Image (cartoon, rainbow, N blue to C red; front, side, top):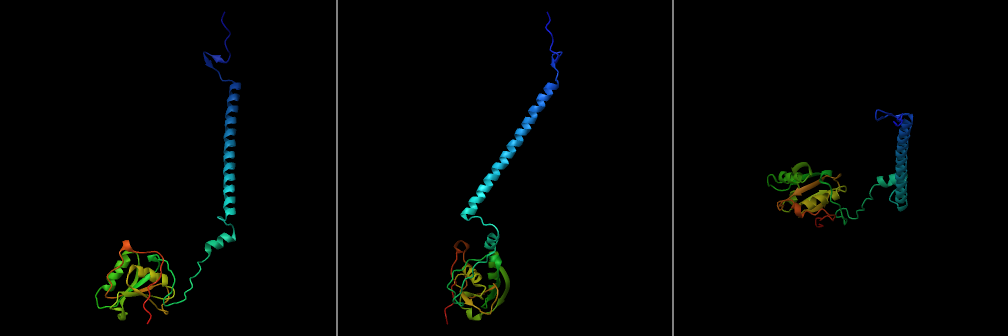
Length: 208
Protein backbone atom coordinates (compact mmCIF):
# COMPACT_ATOMS: atom_id res chain seq x y z
CA UNK A 1 0.00 0.00 0.00
CA UNK A 2 1.35 3.45 -0.99
CA UNK A 3 2.30 5.58 1.95
CA UNK A 4 0.57 8.95 2.26
CA UNK A 5 2.71 11.80 0.92
CA UNK A 6 3.90 14.64 3.11
CA UNK A 7 1.85 17.69 2.11
CA UNK A 8 4.97 19.81 2.62
CA UNK A 9 6.73 17.93 -0.17
CA UNK A 10 6.02 18.36 -3.79
CA UNK A 11 7.79 16.14 -6.27
CA UNK A 12 10.61 15.61 -3.78
CA UNK A 13 11.05 19.31 -3.02
CA UNK A 14 10.22 20.81 0.37
CA UNK A 15 7.65 23.56 0.29
CA UNK A 16 8.38 26.40 2.71
CA UNK A 17 5.34 27.11 4.78
CA UNK A 18 4.44 29.85 7.25
CA UNK A 19 5.91 27.89 10.16
CA UNK A 20 9.29 27.62 8.43
CA UNK A 21 9.28 31.32 7.60
CA UNK A 22 8.41 32.23 11.17
CA UNK A 23 11.22 30.04 12.57
CA UNK A 24 13.78 31.57 10.17
CA UNK A 25 12.67 35.10 11.02
CA UNK A 26 12.92 34.41 14.77
CA UNK A 27 16.44 33.01 14.38
CA UNK A 28 17.64 36.10 12.45
CA UNK A 29 16.06 38.40 15.03
CA UNK A 30 17.86 36.58 17.84
CA UNK A 31 21.19 36.94 15.99
CA UNK A 32 20.66 40.67 15.51
CA UNK A 33 19.73 41.08 19.18
CA UNK A 34 22.83 39.13 20.23
CA UNK A 35 25.08 41.36 18.06
CA UNK A 36 23.54 44.52 19.53
CA UNK A 37 24.01 43.13 23.02
CA UNK A 38 27.68 42.33 22.35
CA UNK A 39 28.25 45.85 20.94
CA UNK A 40 26.69 47.44 24.03
CA UNK A 41 28.82 45.32 26.35
CA UNK A 42 32.00 46.25 24.39
CA UNK A 43 31.26 49.99 24.56
CA UNK A 44 30.51 49.76 28.29
CA UNK A 45 33.75 47.89 28.92
CA UNK A 46 35.78 50.50 27.02
CA UNK A 47 34.11 53.30 28.99
CA UNK A 48 34.92 51.59 32.28
CA UNK A 49 38.58 51.20 31.22
CA UNK A 50 38.80 54.86 30.14
CA UNK A 51 37.23 56.15 33.36
CA UNK A 52 39.51 53.96 35.48
CA UNK A 53 42.64 55.09 33.60
CA UNK A 54 41.61 58.74 33.93
CA UNK A 55 41.04 58.35 37.65
CA UNK A 56 44.47 56.78 38.10
CA UNK A 57 46.14 59.64 36.18
CA UNK A 58 44.35 62.27 38.27
CA UNK A 59 45.22 60.58 41.55
CA UNK A 60 48.88 60.24 40.58
CA UNK A 61 49.07 63.86 39.42
CA UNK A 62 49.84 63.00 35.81
CA UNK A 63 46.61 64.59 34.61
CA UNK A 64 45.42 68.02 35.71
CA UNK A 65 42.04 69.44 34.83
CA UNK A 66 40.75 72.98 34.44
CA UNK A 67 42.79 76.09 35.15
CA UNK A 68 45.71 74.23 36.69
CA UNK A 69 46.49 72.38 33.47
CA UNK A 70 46.27 75.56 31.40
CA UNK A 71 48.53 77.53 33.71
CA UNK A 72 51.09 74.73 33.77
CA UNK A 73 51.21 74.59 29.98
CA UNK A 74 51.51 78.35 29.48
CA UNK A 75 53.82 79.13 32.37
CA UNK A 76 56.94 80.96 31.21
CA UNK A 77 60.33 79.61 32.29
CA UNK A 78 61.88 81.34 35.26
CA UNK A 79 64.47 83.83 33.97
CA UNK A 80 68.06 83.24 35.01
CA UNK A 81 69.40 85.91 37.33
CA UNK A 82 72.63 87.39 35.95
CA UNK A 83 74.94 88.56 38.71
CA UNK A 84 77.82 89.71 36.49
CA UNK A 85 76.58 91.06 33.17
CA UNK A 86 80.01 91.22 31.54
CA UNK A 87 80.82 87.58 32.30
CA UNK A 88 77.88 85.68 33.81
CA UNK A 89 78.68 82.57 35.81
CA UNK A 90 75.68 80.74 34.40
CA UNK A 91 75.23 77.61 32.30
CA UNK A 92 73.53 78.46 29.01
CA UNK A 93 71.69 76.13 26.65
CA UNK A 94 72.83 75.61 23.08
CA UNK A 95 70.27 77.34 20.82
CA UNK A 96 68.63 76.38 17.55
CA UNK A 97 70.76 77.98 14.77
CA UNK A 98 67.57 79.12 13.03
CA UNK A 99 66.31 81.03 16.07
CA UNK A 100 68.63 84.06 15.82
CA UNK A 101 70.91 85.97 13.44
CA UNK A 102 74.67 86.57 13.25
CA UNK A 103 76.48 89.60 11.90
CA UNK A 104 79.98 88.61 10.79
CA UNK A 105 82.77 91.19 10.97
CA UNK A 106 86.22 90.97 9.40
CA UNK A 107 88.67 92.56 11.83
CA UNK A 108 91.65 92.09 9.49
CA UNK A 109 92.82 93.02 6.01
CA UNK A 110 92.32 89.44 4.82
CA UNK A 111 89.93 89.62 1.89
CA UNK A 112 86.85 87.42 2.07
CA UNK A 113 87.33 86.37 5.70
CA UNK A 114 83.86 87.50 6.77
CA UNK A 115 82.10 86.09 3.69
CA UNK A 116 83.84 82.72 3.94
CA UNK A 117 83.01 82.46 7.65
CA UNK A 118 79.42 83.48 7.02
CA UNK A 119 79.06 80.84 4.31
CA UNK A 120 80.40 78.15 6.65
CA UNK A 121 77.89 79.17 9.32
CA UNK A 122 75.05 79.16 6.82
CA UNK A 123 76.00 75.63 5.81
CA UNK A 124 75.34 74.66 9.43
CA UNK A 125 71.90 76.28 9.48
CA UNK A 126 72.72 79.68 10.95
CA UNK A 127 71.14 82.89 9.66
CA UNK A 128 73.57 85.62 8.63
CA UNK A 129 72.17 89.15 8.89
CA UNK A 130 75.10 90.97 7.26
CA UNK A 131 78.82 90.93 6.48
CA UNK A 132 80.98 93.91 7.37
CA UNK A 133 84.28 94.96 8.95
CA UNK A 134 85.15 96.39 12.32
CA UNK A 135 86.68 95.70 15.72
CA UNK A 136 90.19 96.09 14.33
CA UNK A 137 91.52 95.85 17.89
CA UNK A 138 90.79 92.11 17.67
CA UNK A 139 92.73 91.61 14.41
CA UNK A 140 95.59 89.66 16.00
CA UNK A 141 93.26 87.28 17.86
CA UNK A 142 90.97 84.42 16.89
CA UNK A 143 88.02 86.72 17.37
CA UNK A 144 85.11 87.43 19.69
CA UNK A 145 81.36 87.00 20.01
CA UNK A 146 79.60 90.20 21.04
CA UNK A 147 76.09 90.28 22.47
CA UNK A 148 73.82 92.27 24.74
CA UNK A 149 71.70 91.29 27.76
CA UNK A 150 69.27 89.26 25.61
CA UNK A 151 71.91 87.37 23.65
CA UNK A 152 73.93 85.37 26.17
CA UNK A 153 72.70 81.94 25.08
CA UNK A 154 73.05 82.88 21.41
CA UNK A 155 76.62 84.09 21.98
CA UNK A 156 77.37 80.83 23.79
CA UNK A 157 76.03 78.89 20.80
CA UNK A 158 78.24 80.78 18.33
CA UNK A 159 81.24 80.44 20.62
CA UNK A 160 80.88 76.66 20.57
CA UNK A 161 81.08 76.83 16.79
CA UNK A 162 84.18 79.05 16.78
CA UNK A 163 86.74 77.72 19.28
CA UNK A 164 89.21 80.25 20.64
CA UNK A 165 86.83 83.22 20.58
CA UNK A 166 86.00 85.21 23.71
CA UNK A 167 82.73 86.77 24.79
CA UNK A 168 82.40 90.55 24.94
CA UNK A 169 79.33 92.10 26.55
CA UNK A 170 77.80 95.15 24.89
CA UNK A 171 75.20 96.77 27.17
CA UNK A 172 73.87 98.86 24.29
CA UNK A 173 73.24 95.89 22.02
CA UNK A 174 69.64 94.70 22.21
CA UNK A 175 67.92 91.61 20.90
CA UNK A 176 69.35 88.18 20.26
CA UNK A 177 71.50 89.05 17.24
CA UNK A 178 75.16 88.20 17.84
CA UNK A 179 78.22 89.84 16.31
CA UNK A 180 81.04 87.49 15.37
CA UNK A 181 84.27 89.43 14.93
CA UNK A 182 86.82 87.20 13.18
CA UNK A 183 90.57 87.74 13.61
CA UNK A 184 93.64 86.48 11.76
CA UNK A 185 94.13 83.51 14.10
CA UNK A 186 90.72 82.10 13.14
CA UNK A 187 91.26 78.67 11.57
CA UNK A 188 87.70 77.63 10.85
CA UNK A 189 84.65 76.32 12.62
CA UNK A 190 84.76 73.50 15.11
CA UNK A 191 84.64 70.12 13.39
CA UNK A 192 81.08 68.84 13.57
CA UNK A 193 82.11 65.51 15.08
CA UNK A 194 83.75 67.42 17.95
CA UNK A 195 81.00 70.00 18.40
CA UNK A 196 79.76 70.12 22.00
CA UNK A 197 76.12 71.18 22.22
CA UNK A 198 75.66 70.51 25.92
CA UNK A 199 74.93 73.39 28.30
CA UNK A 200 77.89 75.41 29.51
CA UNK A 201 79.39 78.78 30.38
CA UNK A 202 80.68 81.55 28.16
CA UNK A 203 84.43 82.04 27.78
CA UNK A 204 84.87 85.72 28.54
CA UNK A 205 87.53 88.20 27.52
CA UNK A 206 90.10 88.89 30.25
CA UNK A 207 89.15 91.77 32.52
CA UNK A 208 91.04 94.94 31.68
